[in-house]
Length: 585
Image (cartoon, rainbow, N blue to C red; front, side, top):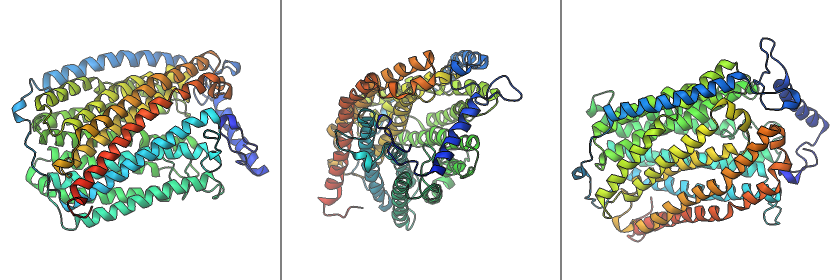
């Protein structure tokens, strides 16, 4: 940390004083102590004998194996039960193509709906930057601190590019979700007075948070804030990297967004009367977006690491994987029922069933992130069982994909929502593969005991975060702009390029790079221990370097898909507003 190490992308000068050296050495010594010291009341360490290291006596607990077996058994039973309930009480007996909405008049967006275009365009720009940073971060595994000989790490060190890569993924998805909420408000209810001005104000606040977060984390990583970057710089926790001040501003922005959505759908709420109706459920799901993000405020700069990790996973798991999923499910149910793809009754029943399955398993399932964080072994049992049940709702996605394909076939080439639904089908695919298969791959305690902290995790994170939430964000974006862009501005050809580029690039990157790297590293973790699997001899060895090069073509294909989406959007704005002589919103 003082002299740096190009092999693992460490810049020199991270530790600049003797006091800093003592403090970081003390922190590592404490971590080693907690992982190697027996609890006073149990025959295992504070971290339940993790990480695996036979040289110091760290072996997997019987609990890890037993509850892994139980989780697989319950998964099989849960899938069978869910399929029975879905087919018996929820699934549509047949698809009535006659109700499919084929007529599509020239869109007449409200002023606030036009403002959402700047949100969506900003989100796409964030996506493009995020892709570039991901490629740069991956390339650092080959050259350490350089990019094809250019010493970029002096300006953009690995820690900064990786931080921004993760942050921008969240900002891209969140921006699309917020914009969809603003769009669907007048779509469901009405356009309140001054809604467009408030939407513009919220956008400015969003830009302040994004720019402030990115610049703050960079300044903190560069060392300009000393060791006190918690408030304005880098909190030091993945997925919640932004400083506490930016975190508070983001929460304030989400509360304002919630009020704007409520103002717009209030007439529909009054007309619905049923507090359990689809419009009310939309409001309830919107409330959870700012509410559960606030869990990230329940730890502070001086909190114990185990406490901070607990509340961090409330945000990462429950907010992103739970309530984002619920909100998106409700919004998609609205949109699909509006275009006649599903009946309103089926949409409502599906929403309740999905909420029950996701939250019924997902809340306690959060514990699978906490197996080795100093918790008692009962947490291993609860986390194993409930995180296995999280895969159950994903088993229904085959029905969802098959139904949506029937919708597209019934609509034919003239169907105006063809590509938004194709992206929604890709969500079902990646939910099953990324969240289901690759998520369950590392969920059982006995597997995670060996695979925690190696390349098996990026397999899940890439295919689930972008495959599910990224594709869902694009699907929501396309559903929204279909009602904003003029009919002449819509281009199925560009969306076809975008769809196959993004999905093909992600799939090939997973198959040819991430999966081989994950299992290669897992082999050494099982054979020798985590220390060797994470050593520079493995992480920067010839095999990993070769597999990093294997991402080159998939990254190019993925980038083509992203740029096709950018061109589609720019063309849509030009033909819908600029060419007509109107001002862009």
